[in-house]
Image 1 (cartoon, rainbow, N blue to C red):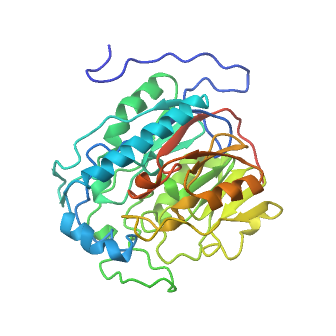
Image 2 (cartoon, helix red, strand yellow):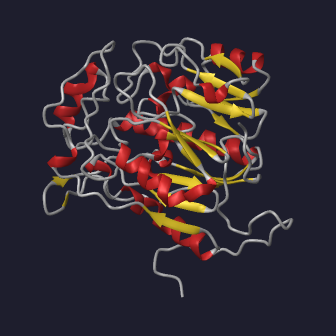
Length: 373
């Protein structure tokens, strides 16, 4: 029987060859041919309950906005504009032969309480943060923001379906997120200061977007949501088949690696020209391209990210790449780098803290586990 409100359980075809798994979940890289993807939603998107985990990563001019609007909905006209762009994105993906799945809306402004604190939610717009796919294992991440504590419930119907279809389904240790998890004496190091992270090592936390996959090698960074404890938990969970490399970049407010260092195809790497002044030795011999200066106007609201969200592209395979339609310098850069850019309007979605990579998690890519270094 299928639980009420759950989608019907799908059946998945057998493997095409002996070396291809039958699991509906299978993805090893950021560039193998994309077959199935989850695209987020902005339904009920709300400003999170104010908490000390926010200032380390919010743009300075947004602190008062978040304090004043904590627990309230984002402006409805911006939500509507972002929703329209998501629908355009979905149409493009389906037109390129990709199966698109969506999470279920869940209430974001209903307060919830643990033994130690009370919060409201935020959204289910960025599945890249909440879910990490490594091979046939789909992993729920123990995220560090209290406002994202129950976000994975939006994906539960899909996770159950994928499990019934043959995938592995793992959940990281559910964090307590007590005050001990956060540096109560944190102070802003400034743009040129040394990294000072707000998360402590009290318990493991990580967002999937602090990892990028290159087959057997996974690139990671510590950040204001991802700690050593979380990285070590993932390393032990994945075992000896994978090697996790942890790098620190020139970023005094790190959160998520996918607008800093972006492996696009075997031997091709896109970098943030300021945060990556020196390319890690691991990528020796790769072609490296610096991302162009962003062209998002100052008047455009960016609640939770810098303009360098223009780097947050999505590879459909080793050639095709989804790029923001108005970002002509990035489109030109992609062509120069040997890729085929597919433009899509996404600037209104950018306001909510992500772009094409953040808004998706690739459930299945056509490829096998390989070493690229």
